[in-house]
Length: 395
Image 1: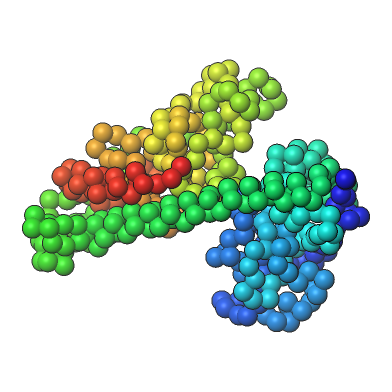
Image 2 (image 1 turned 135 degrees about the vertical axis):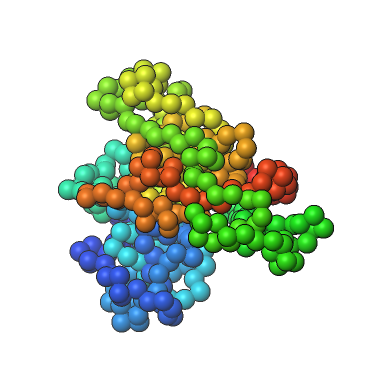
């Protein structure tokens, strides 16, 4: 049986609606709105869904969400999908979202449809029909409506969907476990290196227990005795990236080669601490033509422009485009210490950026930003303290 997205299913997008101005988003209300940023690798991130007034919600009655509605992003990173598995308050969607609703559930299993839209088959379709706007990529409703899906009988659909849903549930559980472990690791860092309550020689919180603090003129604050201040270039080698000519096909590949990371790759993986590869890899000829440096696993990747502040740790050898300033750890400072140090310094890094077209932080400026440098003993104890969190993380 074939199912046509346009003819057989309910398909709606907020066509022509300009969206909300920033001041129309509310801090809290009984009505929610989902935009493209809320769609994450097959699920809806309700933590970043917005709040709107009842009046705004009522403006578009045809796309008031229902349980099991499937959402598809049509602007920016097009083709991201999510499904409404719970609906705790009345919710609608922003202008960058299509709503797809199964109205033939006696022939088509909704979970099967959702799993199909998460698959490479749908990504292939998207790549074939996407059209360029003046400044942004769009997926048009007329194009999406052309999609036809060949489906087996309903019983087979349900069996396939059940297996894939179980896998999704396991992934979601793993993500929650990882998020909790990450929160604990970040708490340890803040407790030790922001509040200075690392364990003293008696195992008690250093500052709270009266540990000696001394004034540091460079940092304009008190730090523990024996600690020092230093520039960020002391905690690792800062390496920039570049882009081989895309006019030369041989510079890039999908499979083999070295992963080449861009800020867009980190935006897609936003919220994830680790990254293995991006959309493209570079070949040996690409590496040479752009004088790219291969950085080892454990490198901390910081997007340094458009925007500043995306942060991730590489799981493998990587290169990046020019939108990064990456920290390769040295023998004294670990990947985890560097990651959290940079994360805490993002506001200061942004404040030190410059540029007329877009804000960017240079290698020299980034490297000159001051930070606190603990003693080697405390750094070693910190790394050992974090090992249980890191070892229990699920890849």
